[in-house]
Length: 382
Figure 1 (cartoon, helix red, strand yellow):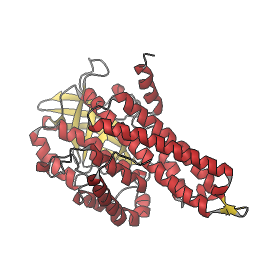
Figure 2 (figure 1 turned 180 degrees about the vertical axis):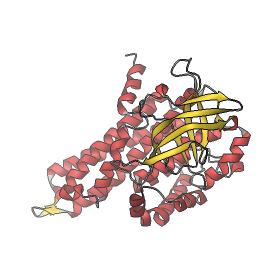
Figure 3 (figure 1 turned 30 degrees about the vertical axis):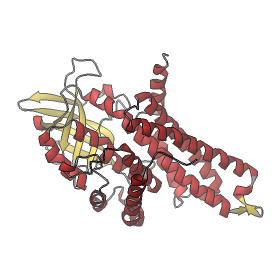
Figure 4 (figure 1 turned 135 degrees about the vertical axis):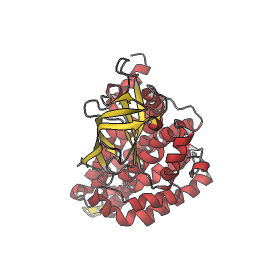
């Protein structure tokens, strides 16, 4: 079915992203895997191409796109190339961006946004803690008022871009006397602040190209000038922006699996067994028909969510549905793609094997699928 979501200007931008991937990503994918990090030069190239500051106002060096569909195009094309690339750039360009664009002061905008948009300042967001996982209200990292600033103590884990980020948006508890979902504040913690340390690059099952690290805060003094948003309103700020994060994840999930499924269909046509292509055997033919249908139906729902978001109608429940269902479809389809490839599908040199490993985390991050079902269940009055 032909998609009606995107317009000619989005198609032009899609070509820009594809050219960036062809020139700066594809030739160096193996290097990124070995280094467990996307090279700084690639970040700068992305900034120069206008990919990192899509929604940053023009006066601060961004594109001022004002249309979330450009983000959809960016995530789709990066995901078709590399789920890790989409994760790393997506965290920066569309997860952190709303905090820095919507919640900061004029002074903070002028200090942070130009380098954010041009790729010289890499960002991350520090929400998750080892003891809490998806339960953001239970975070233990604390910030205590002292003079004209705050003293930050605690740690974060599983932080994408954490190992080399120049600026991390960190959630910390600032009023322990309030209910768990209140008394949390967001801080901009900058590289080089005394007491801010990073652990090793975490050794993940998949997506090795996206560096992921633990972050440690040992009496880090953060000035009032680095408070993001309102004091004690950090949890509310995060909840308001999580639907977009989950929509980002859904877009990536579908685009990633769609690309690998296309390659699997081509493989099934070319690979022969018992005198004919393996795709022509009824079991595989019917299976591939099911897989294509599953992906296209998921894509249609995600597209509807993107349209709703552009129109200001996306709610948290629709985003939760898109996130968990797309992750399920992605993982189910990729498992079948592995099977169709046979023994080759189990070899890391084949993209399908790497994609299978890369996808497993999508049922966990941005709120686990179980949390998504809990939210949906509550909306049903259960």
